[in-house]
Image 1 (cartoon, helix red, strand yellow):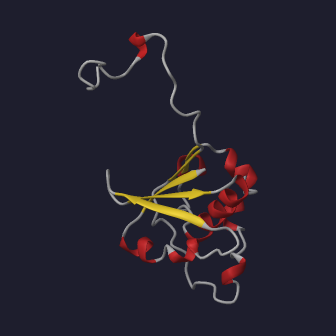
Image 2 (tube, rainbow, N blue to C red):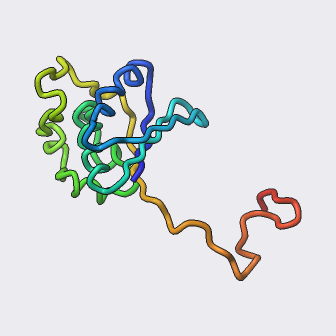
Image 3 (tube, rainbow, N blue to C red):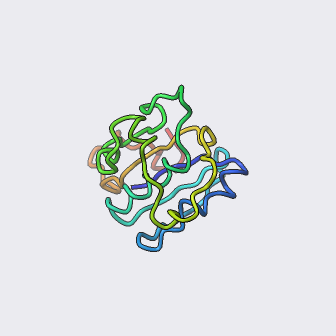
Length: 142
């Protein structure tokens, strides 16, 4: 599972809150193709659900934001994280590694939305070349 996270300066500085989880390591890569996006990749479904819980604990949606527009893509991870609605997000307990040092405020509204995905099936060899998206002679999009 991966989550795309749009970060501003404050949330970038606070990203250590989410990533400081020694029991479930997270690999983080940043891309700046369309703004300040971070891609966080968890090694398995369990780690992904814990990552999402931490993200939602520290970066909950605004009160007027619908959870369906805050979590985009593969919403099945919400069930694994025990989240069915915004009330479940608000009731998330602090992660165990910060229970003695809970931040005084959450960064509500600092993230626009999360995109949750899973790896696809990978490259596919097309038998019908008309379905290709690239021109085989130039390598450019059709």
